[in-house]
Length: 517
Image 1 (tube, rainbow, N blue to C red):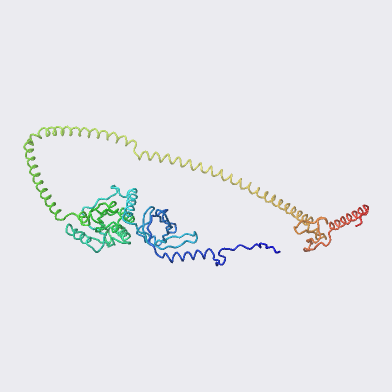
Image 2: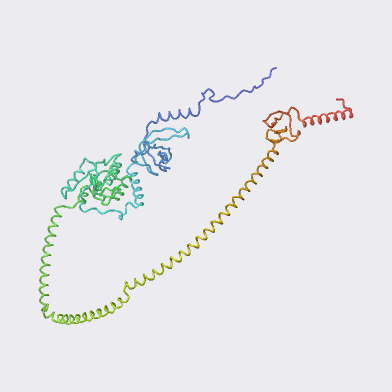
């Protein structure tokens, strides 16, 4: 009878025959598959989680709808060329290619073009931008400049081809011919906003008295169109350039019902380009007519004023009295005062003559010549006394100098003698100390046959117990140094003897205890 026993077997592995690949290889395979099946796509969605360009210049955000979302990337070079800048919550149409990012095991869209998804999105973007600029105060009336009454030069920023520039040139030439500078730009398309911004800044950068004169007034004009056609005049760089213009600016964009953001910051908004031309200059014929009318009124008013002033002068002349009658009393008063003045003048002259005589007599008694003679005599006496005093003082000083010279000579001789004796004693003492130093120095001891022994650290060896076997020693003699090595040290011999004694003692104790080994 045989019995069957179950033999355990290894479990089968699912997909054991599949080739092994690395994670990087799998990621690259997925990347090629996605890019091959979705080469270029156009996706509609709402921008989410947008925080502006990265420090590198690239932009990262997401596109989402009601039930899904996808990561999006805009490279720096594409970001600089986009007409529509990404904004949080803006619904857009993004054109690009789908790829994967192996570092996060995710897929994403590399955006190459971005545009608002319909008029509703444009209106929402326009309203948000208008509120932002209004908050900054760019639309305030207080910052707007007055338009010049009759500008010498007018700068026009518009397309060089089309009816707009012709209407403006014709209208200005018809009303009041002025110098016109045209800065040609595109008024629609991807580069329109940059060209308009450059034109506004360029006009403002011209020197006032340069070869090309700076305009006194700028007109930014364009014909009518849809919201998309007029979008260049809603771009932030155009609006900020118009707000920063130091030259007064008139905006004439589209028809009367069309409104763009540049209209809010312009110093004056014209409903049409033709109306902008009319607002920039007055009508020359009207000015001439008005001037002639004012001239006639001024001449007529001057003639009437002259006649009225003549009549008033005649009436006042009749009211005046006769000159002789009117001046009789003042003349008598003048004659009487003249006589009194002459009498007063003669009296003052007499008083002054008497006072002058008294002063002359007093001056004779105290004349400068008399005072000078008196002072000269006194000065002569002082000089004599000074000479006598100086002679006495000089004699005393000479005697003092002679006494001091003799005393100095005696002290000098005594000092030289004392100094010579002191130096002699110090020299003898120095020779004694030098001889004693030579006698007591270790070099003298080495010369008598002694030696100095030092170890490796330079310490002196004063006893054999300070040495060890194989240690290097340095021996200083009178004429040099020797180096030697210790073969056998006393402390090493003592250690061996001590060890031998301990061993002998141990063997004796072992014999006493009856050990067999």
